[in-house]
Length: 292
Image 1 (cartoon, rainbow, N blue to C red):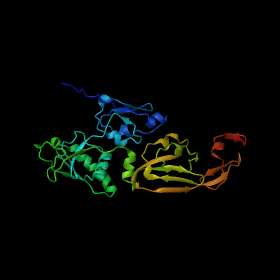
Image 2: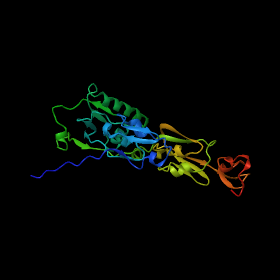
Image 3: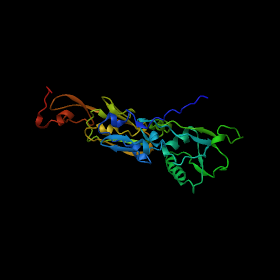
Image 4: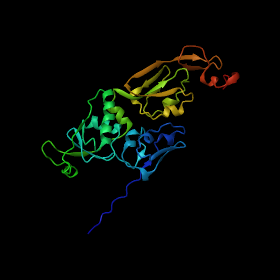
């Protein structure tokens, strides 16, 4: 008789695409904020994942803007028609995961006992608050199916209209933005009084939310996944993030080409007025000249 040994399960870890691996002063803590077991912590600018505390619930997969979580997969769930059914996980899913089920599988209800599974009832309530803002149909709580029927063993077995399927949904903040293009979860705001138009934020943004040309500074809000890379590199702290959801928009701010009275070099500016260029503003007492 041949024995088959189970392959060891990959330990959860943080991959190289994490913003904290790329940027020293990254402010991203999306995975830390959604972890129910505090298995993810931010210590001295680095994300640490303690595998012994990890439930593998998958919340971090849907929150991470960089897809940097390794060794964890989205949980498999059971559904019949437009309803999630038992067996339900002990830990309810995060709103971000339920939004993917809503759009990709057209789920509109959960079959559960609110008294025995209050976590799922609360998860549906939180989801419905977001769906109302998205102008989408809300979910319902339905009485659970007969507990004597083992849904897991009947998965994919036909029984009229009661076919039970099992599936998991794809993850990632980028996917969520693509599924709901009418609204922006996070909006980047630029303060023209502080912004030097250096272009650092546009070069570090992985979603191309911020775009700078010779004549226009453009922001496309729906692309933003709140990675906060732009905040980490802005030398003048000219950027802020506002939480949504808000109607998606593309904002175009016209720029002007002016000449610095100190070094005589042309540079992009928010207003058509004579002023020092960003480099000359950093040099006091007129120490910078045209030879710099």
